[in-house]
Image (cartoon, rainbow, N blue to C red; front, side, top):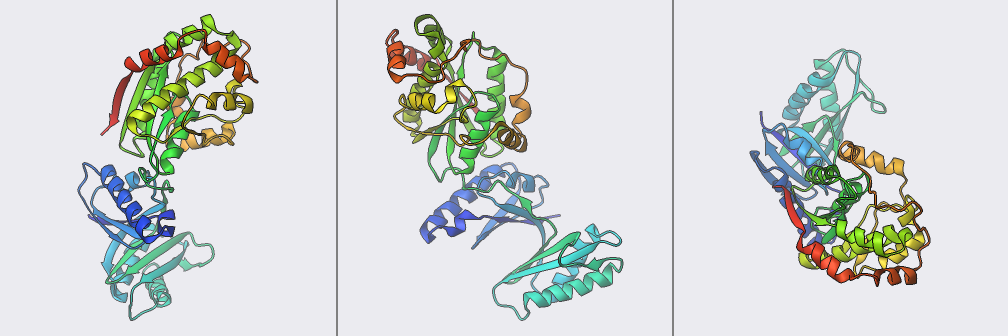
Length: 382
């Protein structure tokens, strides 16, 4: 049976008319991308997007589209009191159990010969008559019958499912994301998508200082992120040779800072290739040695582009909560070897002068060029 899905958005409605139209069009384009393979019809009214479909999976797909605040699967009927009461009774019979309380919440857009309150009263009376074991409780109902009347149509539903919220992917430009395969960086990637950014993740393959399972995790996580935008290009950059030079030729305690600076240099080059305007990482202040304020400042000096850190003020519990909610936590915690290049006593207060001096002990530019030449692009999603 065909249903109508109502899609609601939040921030978009606050934009200027010109910007709102552009953002709405991008959101519709992303919705169509998420619905590929399904049969549907999409239409738009101010403040709402409607999808007519018989597909059972369409609703859950819509909850994962950035820019969508909430969704409801509705029964569509004519905007008459009789038709609305009939459809509302069907919905109430489906969900109300003996002794449970309900409320009716009606809203209208357009001109009608009845008010929202009159709809509330008529529907409430009809439900009480059809389900005599039920009762009305407007303050703390067990269930709510929602009714949206728009012009000549009315939509009846009993649930509002939360969406991702934020802004449509692609409205805020492109960002290169450092994706390690651990818990933090996938959350950072997700948050950048939620803020409207098209992401280009880079995985730095530290083999032989990590094993192949780390690379496999990064690929699996990239596939999971396609729940929120259906096509992602993951760049895999071989990084073992660069790490070897750091370990053998530079002060050992600076390995992590040198490593991240080199990653930023590579990310800047990739950003030039794809037209990205910033780099994003999963760093959280003070979480590991390279993420002190001093070290972050030294690391940022290696980047010409703006560096975004959406997790900077979060603790591990907050990050893990988001990772679980977006479905990346389980993959991120699968067994894999940690990086064996990490020094026993990493520097937490690195001096920029000493770091640059360490970089002069090898040809950093040649190492980066070699790594880029050997990099691979893996397309995930469709």
